Length: 301
Image (cartoon, rainbow, N blue to C red):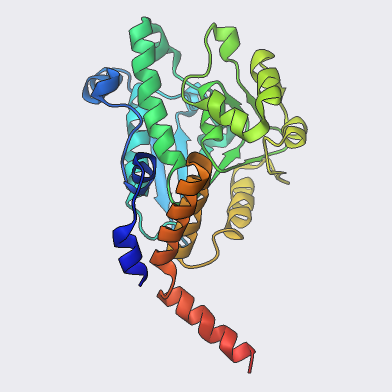
């Protein structure tokens, strides 16, 4: 019955975008030419974005450019997209932790690339590329956590907003320094920040270029929790344990839950309800559902 309902569902264009893997916000109709942007970004090497996928279903995405406080070089921006695509195709995945190498998160864009991409057209092209990448990351059917160690500045602060949750170590900070650079957030950070902390707090944070230490971030809802340790390995272990409580279960169920929440955020209510129905059809009567019913039956005897 569920399959028949799925076949007869009428999906809006917004719902179809959420259903499809690898769909981006911008394309040539918006004046965005991805291959040209990629060629430009390749001119600015340095650092790497590394992905470790564990059998538990939790991935660890590491921003690795410690000599520049893990600032994004052009090649790192390209690698981030590659890792997002890899995560989109990881059917066994349930969660992902984003962190920076050597106990700091990220200082944003590498200034060498920023100086070279000086025109308005260059800035908008980079904006569209990173918005595409981080929106695809946000829509992953994985529960995501930003582990903020050290500083998350500028574009680094924006990356934290692309995650479902943020955890901060005792000595860390998040700061949107864009105003001081004469610009505004351009990787989607302002829009996502409003969703996380509300428009009034977002105006204060952005307009004041406020330094959000863990206590301040906790008080305005920017972080879920302040971890006990600032040591790199121990704080990662804490973050893994924190995330594990929300991804305990079959991948198909966790992934369907995340998709359902994404549709609730991005779609009109009627569309979100229809999408929730369709997602239910992918797990109702499935192995995890039948096993759970069997266990409950034993308890009720």
